Image (cartoon, rainbow, N blue to C red; front, top):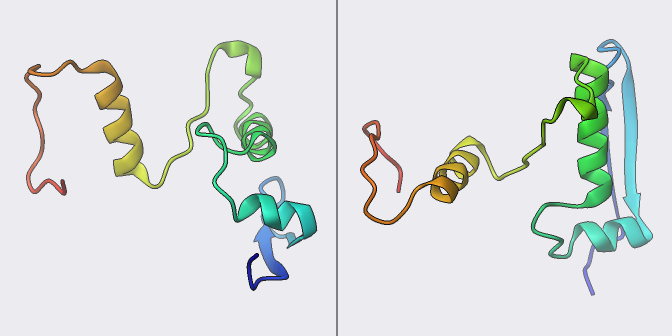
Length: 99
């Protein structure tokens, strides 16, 4: 279906910045990554980011926080504001605005 057979790259270990972790996506993982996924994100990836917050920042899942992944800060801020505002509500915005 896709011309890609694999993706390989290296990331910095979030717990040990002097170490690198090789990552390779093939087979079912690559097929899943190239398809549209659940709106909230890929469950395994979300779990990895939650674990990263626990390891790197000492945040525990039981503290009542959630994780939001978006296409950049403006996308996430727009979605958060859009979720709590009603049509016609006054809001303040900075200039320039990229809308």
